[in-house]
Length: 206
Image: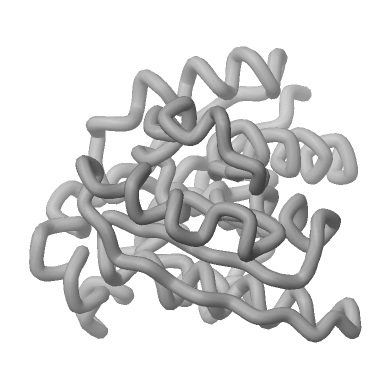
């Protein structure tokens, strides 16, 4: 019987890309997408989700569990802290899309700069990095930068060489990574690293 992966999304805009990544990294795994349209808007991107928004995400996880998903990918970094808080309520393993990137970063060094075009994405990624570092007994420093897409490369250049890794917090920022190709500092993004981790998780559950 094929494994089932549930992807919880806050917009349908990334659906095709996510399915393509599933085909690349998770062949043979059935994919179900659970989309909460309206759960990411300019207000939420700036200030973060409200309790009502978090309850809506809970119900999407509940729907994924009810159809038999073996694991759930939380696609929206803005809801990263929500995903962590809700994980103990569900049997399927909840994987955050930025988790793989952060684990990769912790293998590189201890000084990090996180960049996000959505202000509310920065704190969840920073919190996850600090928590994962703490569990590993690592003393790390993290700085966060809220930038526009247009200013990302110029702002990231200011920290190039002063940190051990530059992290692009959101899936939508992965397409901007080539702008920083000549940097001394490794530039990490969430998509491929997230799906590599997800592949390992699904294999461990088989």
